[in-house]
Amino acid sequence: MGRYVLRRLLQSIPVIFFSTFLVFLVIHLIPGDAAAVLAGPNATSEALAAIRQDMGLDQPLLVQYFVWVGHLLQGDLGRSTLSGQPIVKLLQARAPATIELTLAAMLLSMLIAVPLGILSATHVRGRLEWLISTIQSLWLAIPNFWAGILAIIIFSLILRWLPPGGRVADGTDLGGSIKSLILPATTLSLYLAAGLSRFIKFNLLEVFFDDFVRTARAKGLSNTAVMYRHALRNAMLPVITILGVQFASLLGGTVIIESVFSWPGVGGLMLDGISNRDYAVVQGGLLLLVLLFIIINLLVDLTYALVDPRIRIGDA
Amino acid sequence: MAVESAPELATAAHRIRPLAPSVRKSPHPLNAAFVRTWRNPLGFLGLVILGLLVFVALAAPLISPYDPIVQHQGKELLGPSAGFWLGTDELGRDLLSRVMYGARPSLIVALMVVALGGGLGILAGLAAGYFGGWVNALIMRLFDALFAFPPILLGFVIIAALGPGTTQVAYAIALAVVPTLGRVARSLVLKERYRDYVLAARCTGAGSVRVMFLHVLPNAVSPMIVNLALIMGFSVLAEASLAFLGLGTQPPLPSWGAMLNESRAYLRNDPWMAICPGVVLALLLLGLNYLADALREAFDPRRVNAGF
Image 1 (cartoon, one colour):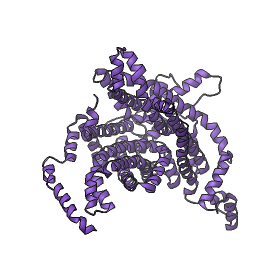
Image 2 (cartoon, chains in turn red, blue):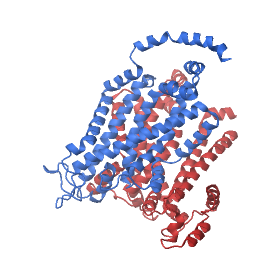
Image 3 (cartoon, helix red, strand yellow):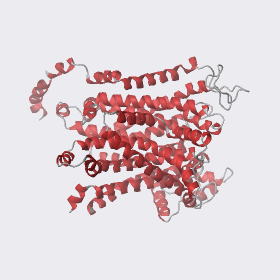
Image 4 (cartoon, one colour):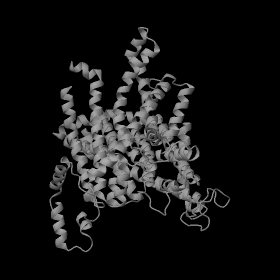
């Protein structure tokens, strides 16, 4: 187990290097030059050179990268070119909303997907399976932002049950907080749930024909016991991995859903950054989300090793 | 030395050759798979939807009732009527014409992604699988790093650098699919690489490039087709998402994602603005999903029959 953890940690080093380098490059991909933007249109070439030297832009790219990483490790992501505020502060203000929405959606999608997956696996080739899979394939064809718009039309504007957008998070109004979370989190979770429940169904069906399930049946266990104590446990293992992989698309989806429901998260910050050409902000947001993704996947792989009895037995 | 082994090769080649005609007698497996796709009801439906929307996109100048960017003054935000079948938007533009023209960016981006992302992914995957060693290590780590970017965020990076627009969106999505297709291609190459026919080709003196493109690649085609169909659906969705965020096709040109974005300010009184572009977008996605499912069943019957 210890060796596996170490190997997995070492494996993630090049990924972290390459992806942070890509994030770092964002600033350098800008048409034009950050120093020129800062200096303004009337700057002399000496002033420009001074700013460049001040910002370290005259150094080789790799040196600049390591300087950037050094600042980063000290919690310094630079300042917004537009407002002059430190990026870390901006992210601190926005990140909780994004993380809350993403985690809520992930949880909700599991709550929807597991029962649906079990139902369609146990009713395979039945009417219920047909119904579930038809709804699934229809649902997978609906872009989440359109689903969000339709949800606003139906639940906010026609039925007036839920707020059409915004986030209530002052800590005193728990009901309001949950109400404001329901539409964005559900919209975000359903797409993931449709894919997940399909995946769970296929895994269960595969496991149903494995020897250990036949053994469990042969020794007279009830269907429920076979299902929950034997089949489901084994079928859920790959689901953990898929959840990690799906986290990337969930983060992407969060950015869009944030925009649909005016959810004050990192996505909106980055979109503003793009339209204002405030690239330090875009860079900061990217870095946060990419690191979040890498860490989640690392954790997923480690949990997998922890949960998988084959690794546990191999270790003991 | 090469001369000494030549007779053996000749006999090996001789042994292989008589098999060829008998293989050709049955229909080509690719054609058979396409026929199976066509006969699959959902696959057929997918092809019909795709064909219809491709036709609309191509024939838009001939069949659309109005110019999609002409603003009919005094006719803003109308409901469906005889003059404007789907009504008009906030600037008095005909929604039906805009929906018709809006098919273009979706399909163009899907095509560009399949060509660019597919081409690049297959090349990189081929190289990684075929050469192994440090080439493989480098390419795989790059794939890992690209995988760490949710596709939409990769879109942010590219568009921050190149500015918003349809082509830029296609580049961004193409880059996002490279690692997916690359990994599939690599695994296929690894599977084929040590097969006898590759060995035979090498023995006849074929170089790496020849073996890769003329021998290995054709055998990896059918699994790739299924993946390319999936990629098309993904591209359409990603294009619409980026356009919805205001990063894709720029106004006044219509795209379904951008139209949905514009509709948001008028949901209370004019919800139909949000309905029409969404319906056609979902229809296209549904068609592509059905097509991909049918192709998967047609190309890999084992997977479907296994265990059921």
